Length: 274
Image: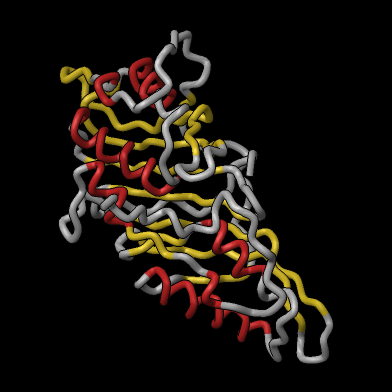
C-alpha cells in the first residue's frame, strides 16, 4: 500500500469552479510539520519566531443594499501556528465573498479573521489596507557580485562560509531568489533580506546558496525556514533575521519572516516588485 500524499487533495494544479457564494470550507490547511521535518525542525522547540504576512489585492463583497465594496487587506499568520494556509484555497475563499452581503465592513474583517484563525490553528490578524512600498531596502545587495553559478537545486548549504576572524552586524539582500511550487511547478520569485550579527558571511557563497534554490520545489514559508536553519547551522550567528517578499500570484503575495527570539520584527513593507 502506498503512503497517502498530503498534497494530493489540494486544489492547486487542477480546474476548480470559482465559488458563487461565501464558503469557509474552501480554505485548505497544510501542516507546517510536514516541511519542517525535512529540515530537521521540531515543534515546539523551534529556533525562531516569526510570521507570514499576506497581502490581498483583490477583495470585494456586497453591502446590505447589494452595492459592491472593494478593499485590500493584510493577513498576519504567526509562525508558531500548526498550519499554513494553501494559497490557491485562500484565493478561492476570498472570491467567495464576491456575492456575499454584509451590513458592515467590520463584519467582513471579523469573518475573515475567524476563518483564517480556525484553519491556521492560531490567531490570525486581519486589517484592511496594505503597507507602503519601500523605495529602497536598508540592505546591501548581492546581485551585482561577479559570481559563477552552476547549481540550481537542491539547495547547497555547503556553499555557506564565514570568516571567524571578523564579527559584523549587517543586512544583505538579493532579488534573485526563485523556487518552484511543489505541486504545480510554477515559479515563485522573491527578494530576500538577511540581517545578522556574527562571523562575517562570505557574500559570494551566500549568493550561490540562494541561487541554488532556483529549481527547488518547496512552499514559500518552508524555503524561508530552510534558509534560516541553514544559516543558523553553518554561519553560527548570534542574531539572525530572514525575510522574503514574494511577488504576487492570483492577487496574493506572501512575506514570511523568521528570526532568532528577541529580534525586533522588520517594519511591514512591500517590495517594488510587489
